[in-house]
Amino acid sequence: MTKPSRRTIVTGGAGFLGSHLCERLIARGDHVTCVDDFSTGSEANIRHLLHNPRFAVIRQDVNLTLRLEADEIYNLACPASPVQYQNDPVQTVKTNVHGAINMLDLARATGAKIFQASTSEVYGDPEVHPQTEDYWGFVNPIGVRSCYDEGKRCAETLFFDYWRQYGVKIKVSRIFNTYGPRMHPQDGRVVSNFIVQALQNKDITIYGDGAQTRSFCYVSDLIDGILSFMDGDEAFIGPVNLGNPDEISVRDLAERICRMTGGTSGIIYKDLPGDDPRRRRPSIALAREKLGWQPTIHLDDGLAATIAYFRQVLFPPLGPG
Ligand code: NAD
Ligand code: UDP
Image (cartoon, rainbow, N blue to C red; front, side):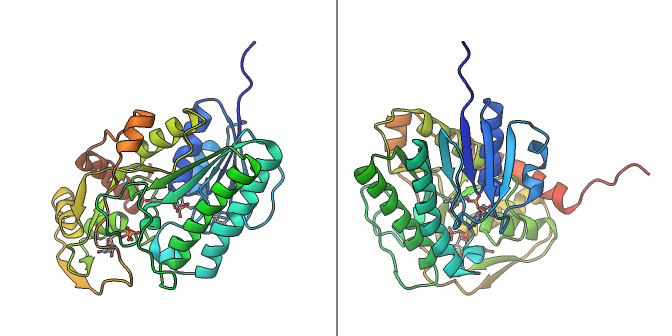
């Protein structure tokens, strides 16, 4: 007898990462329900899945309770760009905390395994470099980034308490900066900003002196990591870092993108936003050991694919006639 296909819920499924995840889950045969309020996601991200009889969309805020049968839940709902999450910080905290409670209650009621998209932001402006999972972080509880950082920290707490108290099957991963096609051109993140500016020959906006670092993971590598974590040993619940350990300064990133797009942009310097972390790079030793996972896509290749995507979004080919 063939195994029945999994009933899978993806919150935030119309967003950048969520849409790639939905695509992969559909491809492996799951019945996927995307739950999204479309606050930062878009129908364009999932349009190619809408015709599929195994794909459904519920337009709903995760702060409202949801009752659905499920075998697996991937909890991704939450804006990821600092500009977006600071737009309505109270809603960001609610999404992280109430949303997590609602999804954990659903996992408890259905017996589903539940994945949490946590973040490198739980480490704040880290004093340990590279960041390992046993580092507790250096986080401002009352700053402009706190709605996200502390919201995600509280969500991790909830996940581990539901596991300890109710035996809910959890998986918590800390995702580091990820980029690729379907990032929103105006969402304010560094990779999308720089590429969009460069393709339009506008000035590249570096915040601060550009010496701050990040480590950028291409989206397909990240989705591979999430899926092998969810499908792997049930006893390994995380938290586990998922990201690319190749570190680059924001200034070097700007120069690289300018070179690759071949435009005429100059570089301008703007004020550094509040509490902007100075350095960020994951230790992925745990992911390597437990999941046999590591990123495979070099930054140049990932940027080339992302530039091609934004080129087509900004300058769509003219139709016939
Ligand atoms: P995104 O903004 O593209 O996607 C978020 C999705 O969640 C959107 O479709 C949005 O409409 C939806 N959403 C937001 N609030 C909601 C709510 N209250 N109810 C229902 N839907 C809601 O961001 P992304 O980059 O795809 O990030 C997805 C998840 O991964 C987030 O939880 C984010 O914190 C986490 N993450 C992402 C990165 C990254 O670099 N992309 C890094 C660390 C963590
Ligand atoms: N940044 C920048 N110019 C931009 C957008 C971002 O210099 O147009 C910087 C930002 O200050 C931060 C880094 O790039 O130091 C990464 O920013 P992003 O918003 O992508 O994500 P973060 O890692 O800060 O959450």
